[in-house]
Length: 163
Image (cartoon, rainbow, N blue to C red):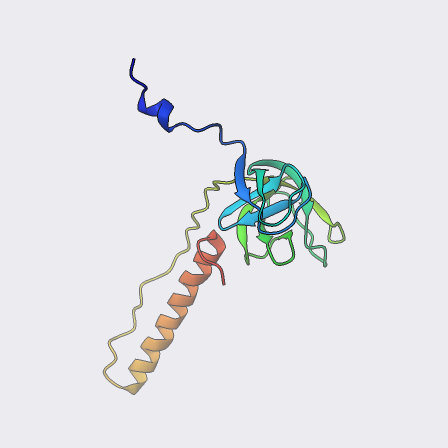
């Protein structure tokens, strides 16, 4: 009997990913490697392989400096400070499952490894005339700057690029 290509390709359920810890973590703390994000299932030291859970409801540290988080707000992982934030400066990891107050140090978060985030931002075509003189060249340059910055902001919000 020949083994099907499915059984030879399948390696296990997607409920746990094995990643090399980029820094020390306790079980229950989050970690990020590239675009992988998960919660360590056990204590681990930097450089060791750790099973991490990439999806589910977790209570994780948040930016507590006057940052209230409404239910459903997008959450980003601040890898420098090892906490969740609402500012799109890190990897988008999920949404707040419940609201958290400004002085709370944690938030109940729904972590989703494959979010569907395709922001649709209206960005009009550049309508400025060709640069035939200095004034029109400056107008064209300014119009292009505004459009490029709008596109970059949209890509940052989607998590496609980071600042």
